Image 1: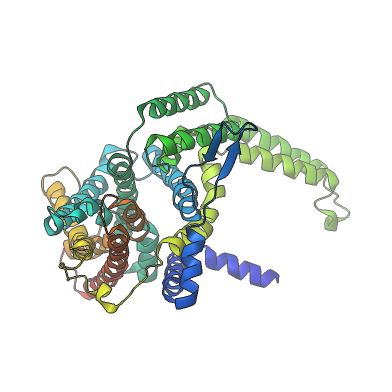
Image 2: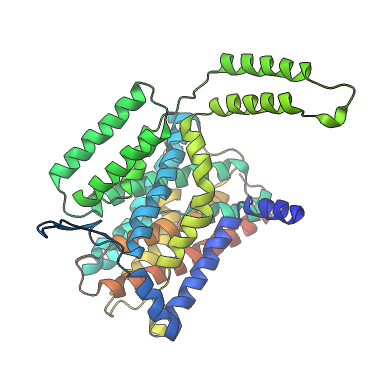
Length: 455
């Protein structure tokens, strides 16, 4: 049993595992949505209303909370808040200490990320200009870091480390841009009063941070309040997770001198209780108490942001994201014409074509062209030990949209008559485009890695 648990733990820690798990969930969702008997229960389950009914004794007050909530909306508007919260923590960490921590470090991936957003949006708009599908321009602009890192880990040392770091930083910057796109362009009608109240609550949270409040439950209460206000104000509720991620304190409870002093003190006490005549008794009762004190001191040296992210990451990677894929990747396919993304004459128009070309063509072109301009103008430097052929090959992996693209797809086409058909066509195109981008990038990386060094 112990060996099995250790082996399972090693597997789940592999970079490729999350991508494989998500792909399995996509396959299961497609089977559920297209099996005649099961599909009815699958859709009915997702559409099940989940609300608390408040009613006063005299019957004058009759209120449902949250309004219009279903199991599918719980997944997309509640569970995904946790996902966006961890994304916000990751962006915050990279800006503070990582690959986006200085102008020099952040310049190239940020410029490349903007190119990887602008070019797919332009291609999609050219295909769907003047149609009801035009509002879906944000769908092909995102990069799924889980699948990209999964493929890079499988390819091993064929890709220079500098380009792996570049793609990771680009995906993080891409996530930040995608968050702004969702917040600015895919919300509902704004209730300014509730939005103003949410700003006040956010300011209160900032004051708690400023005055050194380090209890997680305080920020949890404020985060739930912000979520409720965002949900009813018209701002997409998931944005509350990003906002709170940037407010969570980054300062550790104990500073470096205190931690070193305490560990030295406890280490000496640990030795003083050592039973030299009976080594099998380590740790004895007093030593176990001291080891718990050392653990508590070490834990206090980690800032709240890191502790929360570390605690939530397994839940996000192996529970929330698979559930999201199961709920949103289940596309009902009435006939094989759904896979004909080049057909722009049907009810879904050019949704599929715009998304597919945006991911497979727009992403790598935008990333490469914007990076080329930045490097040639001496604003940025080329990643170490990388040539343009390998750069373009890695940029193709940026076309793996999946999670964020499907999320934006669920928010798009709200004013269209055939909204469900267009969203389903969008999801098919996302899956086909992401798969094609992954295969194209992998093949090009393998081919380029065999070429003689021509940098």
